[in-house]
Length: 279
Image (cartoon, rainbow, N blue to C red; front, side, top):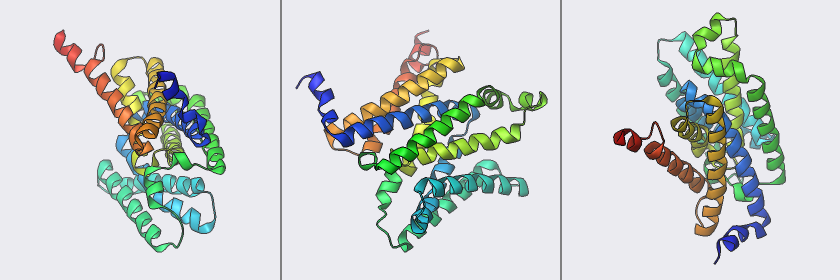
């Protein structure tokens, strides 16, 4: 079979076209956000938010509300809880994050086991982009537009906040507002990633593209485009790979992202370990 035939075969199915488009969209948005996550060192925070949305999804289903609404409320709620416990106790932030996100995730598992519904836990945990509905597509588009608009609108302030929050505070920037704005955007992105890679693997989409691009360049603008490009490419290749191997779509997307990171880790012009050894 020729390469053209390999590329065109999945496009004969409507569900594959939808999966490719939504995966590329979510991948691009998560790639953009991952640059800020990488600079800020918020990989664990992304993990916390992505897991904490599970009880919100279950409660939203039980109340007949959109999954995205429940997930966003609990995502922001987990962030507020982390901030409150950190301020009111002597426990370090990474410990608080671990306590909160495991507690929220456990609550979600209990709610799933006690709620009579046709919710498939596997779809929540690992996504179901091949079976995404029209309503979910519309919600995902709206969420992605909001995330991109906020990141572009506050781009300069967020960049300074991630690089040097002390300097940002000294020149009058409201770093507290930016802190919670970035966390809210993170919650929205986690909600968008629910349909593509699910709760467990969405953290990879929020961290890996930015980490890959960070190895390839020292300029933020270039890092942004590299992260978006690698994330979109990973999403498209992952969906194709899952089609031809009959494998988990979410797993394939994340595997491709991990493969690109390993290539950058080894072969990046200035920061790759092989290039450093040869010099």
